[in-house]
Image 1 (spheres, rainbow, N blue to C red):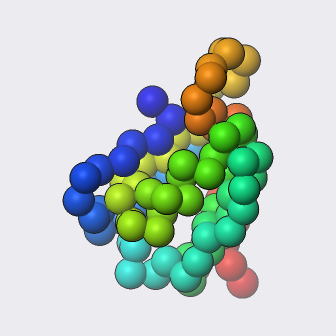
Image 2: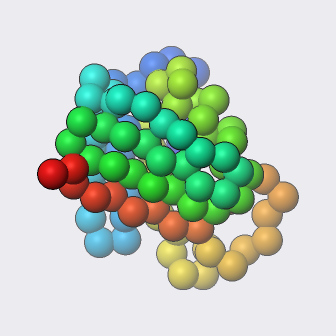
Image 3: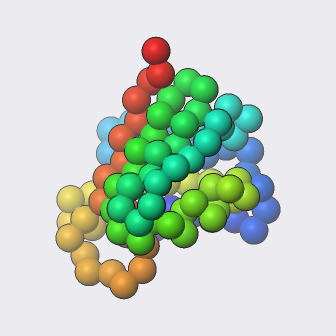
Length: 96
């Protein structure tokens, strides 16, 4: 699964890329913005950009801090046809 949502608030967001994992504490979360195709999450130390389709559901989980994990899909997973939310890429950049 490319994302995990909990019924209760999570203390961290795990962002799992193909070659690196980031554990970002929700206490450093500033805001999120975006729509169906791209969402930006701003933390005090890092920016996370998620691209895909039907991503508005993620905004709901972000506002409640129920999102616990985002995982970058492998190459084969990017081409699957899905009627629901689909993540195609995730990038994490350190804020200077």
